[in-house]
Length: 537
Image (cartoon, rainbow, N blue to C red; front, side, top):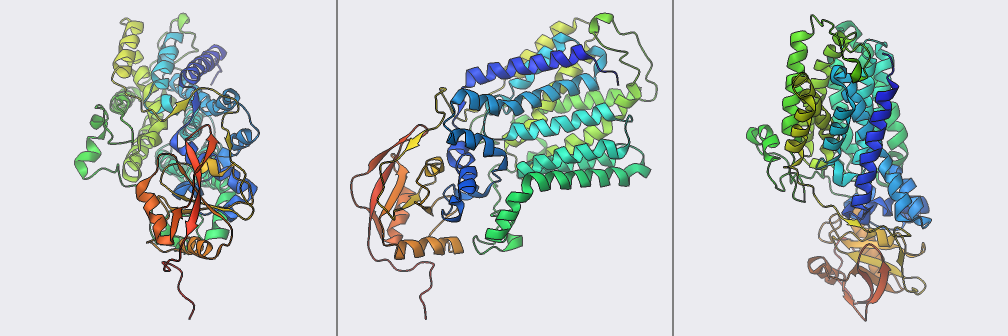
């Protein structure tokens, strides 16, 4: 396929422009996950704290930190919020760029600068894309890999052999799932796409190349962390799917988030309509977005038109002003993509519904739907005021959108700063809260371990090997014990301390923390009955 440099430059310019605007308006990230584990886990793993701390970042302590290492190292070095945010924005930029290139590849006949600008604006303003731009959620990293893989599929169709097409797709999809396990639904989508992406005789080659690439990508991006979890906890996915691995460090539970899963067939079918109203059906925060419903409709229209024209893609003259090469010389190839793309979308979408139904995880499809909506409008109104139609469609998509507020702060330098009062020798810090304060634990002196008594993972009334370690340490430790807690006390979690004979025994000391209001309180100890540790015979 001839390369149109002007179209590439326009896509890059649009992606850069809208990403920069989003970064300036949103400011630096301060979301719940950052304050909980995106900073703590990579630093604790790199500096050896994970071997002495226990569940400081709650159940999220054991999420793969490899992709967060550059961010954490920059924070540790005292880098300011602006350069760190620029770094975090790179996946957002790439995801948007590949989405725009995919649009031009799937629907080149109506390609124009106006369409690219409108598509970029519709994409960046999505309820998942916009608030997640330059954030540590890493959903944009998944989107960048997924959209790059889709673009490779569209640009390579019938121009390369099955191995050359599907091995890179497997690498990209495997890397996405390796960095973030929630991307597994898109791996299923690519398997479905491969099943109907060409002649049956080439199916083994397609699936084999996809599996090989996926295995290599996952091994590179998840393997080191999976090996660490296997060595320390006997479960390479710890704490998830522990009903398979039976690690003694947690209950034999799958540990799934069931809050947003649909109940019954009707909720599976009406999910796009439920996304039209502001609700918490798919998120902790209020959100609404019509892109799923409109995107599925646009995909259906595109597939139907491809079905009608695929057998006889008659060339037509394309105006020179479009800046396109002969847009119909590869029409049969583009129409052949309709079934793989449809299979990818449906399997990924219903896989997402069945496994998570958390809207953030749908970000790659939201971006894909955004460009499909704009692309199909450009086709339907190609000869009837196309720019007016694009602008009207843009307004109709953006106006009902409600963005969740995940938390942002003004830019500062350093981006994150935490400092403690001097702690006596042989101190141990405990936490007893479900609030995200593990980012502060990352700044404790290396010789001071942090143990969680109670959070969304630890519970003194649910005995595991980790809970036994906490109880044994509190019972036998001869040095000072300190409680790290939010200034606004989490009373239900704090009450659990009484089971360990612990009470706040003096005035709390302020901790200088740029992300949260926390304090350090001395603890007094009294004898307590063993909960999880069995008495020696």
